[in-house]
Length: 300
Image 1 (cartoon, rainbow, N blue to C red):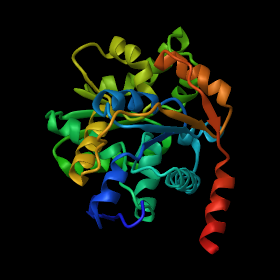
Image 2: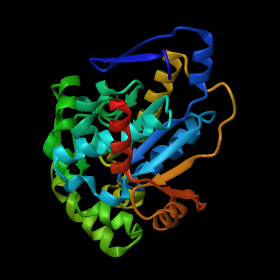
Image 3: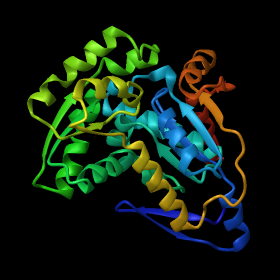
Image 4: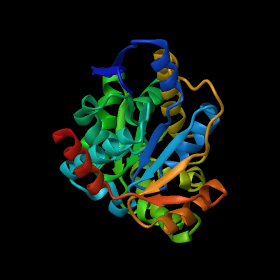
């Protein structure tokens, strides 16, 4: 991305282009999507729908999931390593398809990179406020709930709404184990939702990208009177608008998606098959090595 610069300034990217050649090259670069595991696959599927001409790189930090039980300092370090690796892959944009990583790290690290970075929180919050929701439930990882990222963002948009949050630390491991149709998983979801049902919420934000894989359970328990919001749709719409605004939308058909993990590639390929309907080729990446490599190159 030589001679093309992005400046992150209060949530907005300002761009300048030195020439049409570099501009055309950037249009053809891939978009990076990352999560701790299979949660971001929903964002990838939505990206296939809305951004059908784009090429994607998907990275799952499976060696260190779940993020929701980690400290903020650890998450910031993880996110920085992933984004540095993506920068080495030549991405033109990164979508942090993890609410926990968005809440803990984006504001701290986005300024360090020369490409736009799209998170989960703000698009999801905008969606519920624009729908006129007044009693909003947020179910998310413990780290996301403790950060109050959704609470603060929603109240900044509309101070009159009521926001109720529930941490659900057991759900990500169950989903990663493929137990998305288990009776036990249904009971766990039901218990987590009890306090939100008591509050008579009108809208529920699925504040973890893993949770839409359990949408059938959420709908069964809450019924049709509660709107259930998966921020993925709004996140990808935000990415599409940003690509268009910057003039870097792809101008040619996409290449196949490349999948990478920090953990076991075979295990991840089997999990992805459950959600995408095909078994991808997955490559393992050692992020610690990548980080050391970048530091060495910068010294040189």
